[in-house]
Image (tube, rainbow, N blue to C red):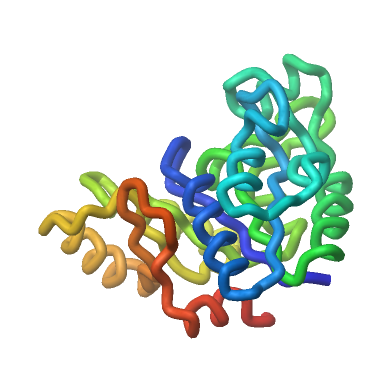
Length: 224
């Protein structure tokens, strides 16, 4: 079965989808047979118009649309609410089966999360499922995507500390919307000092390629 990494972020609309697409594109350009998977997606009418469809197109994966996402909800709200509105709650067993199916076709799989790390996926009388439960269910380490600008130190440190409390492995941080200002450079310095983690890549607006050290890329997918 293929190796995987889970992409989470410090919040919604932080750029996880864009970064995931650039990461997959980079890997495929390097000859690494890489696919994509997202367990739960809300705010789209169909796969082609969704984040998953965007990644499939930008990274030129050519993956079968039905294998990209397990649960698709049209309402642009948190997954736990979207599933209630549709009456189709998330099942962890289904997500695990679908992930394994993708992993059998690709040597590497980039898995994208929903929202931030404390995103409720299902919250009803039968089950309480959060994003962290999906990560643990798939037995994956993570990359954290964060905004390079003002306020990111607090957001990143809180995200990292929460994930460490939950015993979730973190391979590194990718800073999005990076333009090289003195503030952003200091943010990187402070984040690395306060978390002990490495900022492994900087993504500028409209970047078409992810800049990352090949050695670091190998470390991300290193066997546990």
